[in-house]
Image (tube, rainbow, N blue to C red; front, top):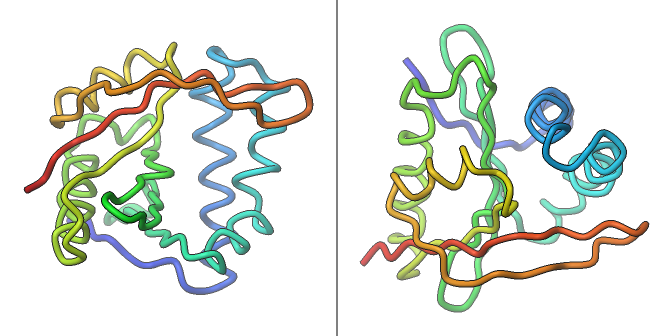
Amino acid sequence: MASIIAVTTTAHIATVAHLAQTIWTDHYTPIIGALQVDYMLEKYQSETAISNQIKDGYQYYFIKTDVGHAGYFAFSLHNNYLFLSKFYVLKNMRGSGLGTLALSFIENKAKELHLPKIRLTVNKYNSKSISAYEKMGFANVESIVQDIGNGYVMDDYVLEKNIT
């Protein structure tokens, strides 16, 4: 049985940072390289970065199963959409329905807030994730390149799902 749990304590934040380290190192190193993964983990998924994001209005949640934490996601609210900033599941837990469970939770949050769509960004070379998002009803609406400092960029697609 899986559940969705709000990240509310410093211990929760530490667990998210640990999950990020594990998931990102495994998944993104082949796509963007170890140096950029390390840079992005520190900038966006360290305990300090997560704490600051929560202070700035991001909502973080765990995906928890009987065997422990299986992933996490985070979103922020915009005028006419919910921005799904983070959506990660441990490699050995992918394909088990946890992403679908989490997306259902996220869609319900957007509906409660009267937001008609969910948007996210995904690396253009992250083909497995792009395919998974498309299966969940997301469509590619834009291509963007964002400078994130230290000589790195995020070369992404913007995906969107209408939920009304």
